Image 1: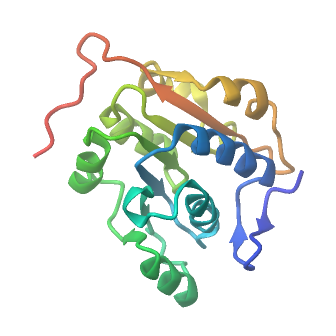
Image 2: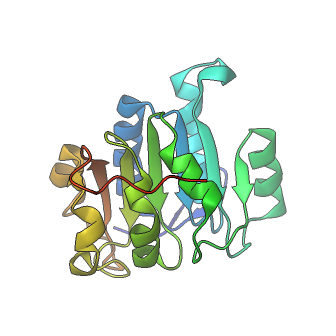
Length: 198
């Protein structure tokens, strides 16, 4: 299975196509109100999300809001323009520090999906995953290459792997040896509730 492929509009996407299609099924069933992507890169995954969002409802008010963190500034002018026209919020903030905006968004009491696919995924999991609420979903790309599960046992202790992820994604290997996994935030355990966001 090829690691990279092209969206129908020609945008290069660095997520294996099988993983993209399985995430589509999970997200259409879950129907999040907020989708947050860490690592826009060329914009391939957001292009897919925009396609799916149109199948949920024609009413813009009820479509999920999309935020994408574009740290490396590789997004083409065309995609940047399309994203803005379609209401995608593009954030160019550095994620390696504590992002107050991101922590605030993750703590909102709405169903959300966080997709971790930036340059320092393990660090971002440690910083931000605990801010998700019980029932929220989190996707991680490059599990097995850039994300070694033994090194993120702490953050992932508060999550269960989504059943569809276990069944269909766990053994979906592409030529680069990368994996995508989807997790669901469990109920608050002990002192796991994140600190208040100012």
